[in-house]
Amino acid sequence: MKTKTIHLFLLFMLATVSATWAQGYEIGDKIDDFDLQNVDNRNVSLNSYKGAKGFILVFTCNQCPYSVAYEDRIEALHKKYKPKGFPVVAVNPNTPASDRENLASMKKRHKKKGFTFAYLADQNQEIYAEFGATRTPHVYVLEKRPDGLYVAYIGAIDDNYRSANVAKKHYVQNAVEALLKGERPHVQQTKAIGCTIKKKRI
Image 1 (tube, one colour):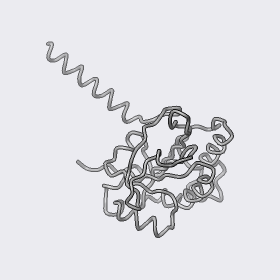
Image 2: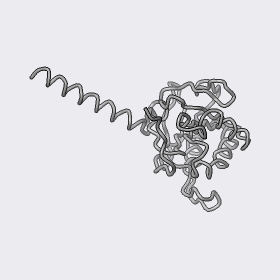
Image 3: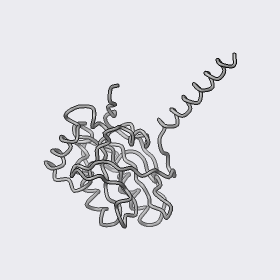
């Protein structure tokens, strides 16, 4: 009976840890930094951005129609907010899934579109899981404080993936503007709309 009880306890603990891992970060959580390969072959961490006040961290990819629809808006956010201390850092969680999402394809997409933000490969598919991202695109606005980076906003870029011209609620922009004013974002979390992240088959 003791052996059976121990086994049941271990299974319970494993399920609890797995559930916590799957949940990812929440608003107000302090995040762990990461170090991933960029399309320029150099490894990039958030701590390598000197002088940053925070980040617009976007989990995105090459092929998802939702990600493609938001590409220009992601670049626009980077150009607008990098000079203000909030650069975009994009992470592709689908890199092992297919030839269309690997690092070589990421390099081609980055060059073709003329992106100026870092585009990192989550090749071990660990970082998106740690954050709790489930879609592409899925955005985390991070605020830098003296003791680290904290999650200030999670969700969608705006309320209309089809067209930036008809979007009425600009969630990421509003969140960053609030942080620049020393305020909390009025809307801190929305539902990310996009393609499911493709996990590597074991």
